[in-house]
Length: 321
Image (tube, rainbow, N blue to C red; front, side, top):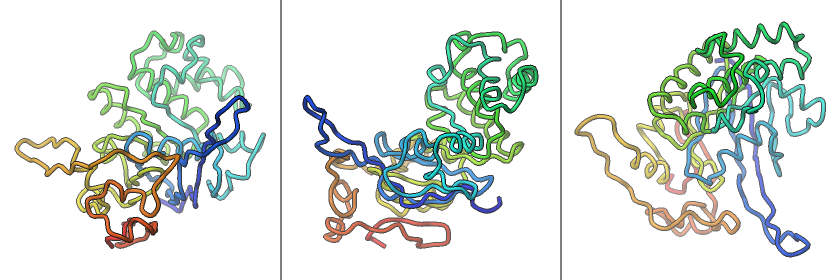
């Protein structure tokens, strides 16, 4: 792996809460709070956490599908936060997204050939004949047949549709792919096929991934490093072996304790968290996890812990350390 391809610094996202006839803003939902990390060239960073923790919003901000409220996103030496219009469209050739529901992200009225050729034609990269040839090569590379180019999305299985989604993401030869729950809607046997395909493509094309998922086993299989999010905050960041073998944050420990174990006869001591996730429109002061943390101290209720590195490559935001 080379230098950093992506640098995210102090990223925030607030969504307004509107009410009344005039739709006045009466509050804000704090979806992402002060998140910072880097992604190396050729690296896969997994982002995990419960539903509603802000991981999908984070991915959409990196893609500039959603504009951040604050913070900076540096991609390949360029500030994405400052790009708009034609400059942003040009930069988007370098980063693409694979969505959770491949059927919803594919135009049901278009044949697969046209779906794959469209980004090439819209961006003026190739003429129509070259784009058609490129579409066929991409289909074959993701494990489909040349004849499939004339079919419509509804004529494919879920796994095949996700292969088409990956092929479309590859069309413009990007450097980064953000995969948002890309395998969660698929059967387990199909999940492994798609993950192995993504790993092969990573080596072949020198891709970097941000892989967003709630499935800890899937994230461990594909990631080099893993970030854990809770209530919009990044609470732990480490290489996958360190995080899975020696989790430091109480929330990470609880997540890992709830994951099923594949080995017969091996059991984990389940950590059951009390209470519900706080309302992101009215988050607690101090550490965002203190309302559910079995090891909370007085400082946790008033002072927000900073994400700091305790060991080489292992950072955690917790007053226990």
